[in-house]
Length: 137
Image 1: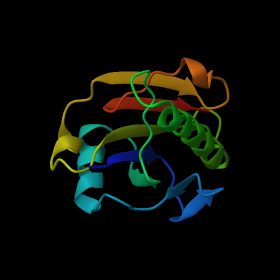
Image 2: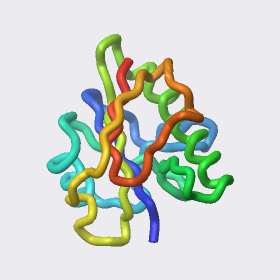
Image 3: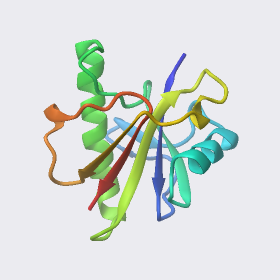
């Protein structure tokens, strides 16, 4: 079982673009069908990618401390990676769900969250799976 994290953007991104090996933009758990379902059911942006790592991005008080710390680092690294691709007023979307359950990517989202790419307190973030996150510049 794996937690997959997807991003949606208004710009095309290079595949295998990484930041210190914390996160990369490439397919790890998903195939095109999964990404199309994420786009159809959750994103309004035209380009969908998987954010690859050994585990997706999920931040809750119920997870083990090392995995929560790692997810926080991944979210910060992803924002740093995406910053040069966004112009003022633009955004990207983020969504995480379990990749082992066929069709879960089409299930209804449970939460929505909007963040500014430069101004949020990572220690105040609550982002369980099935949370649609809009990160604005």
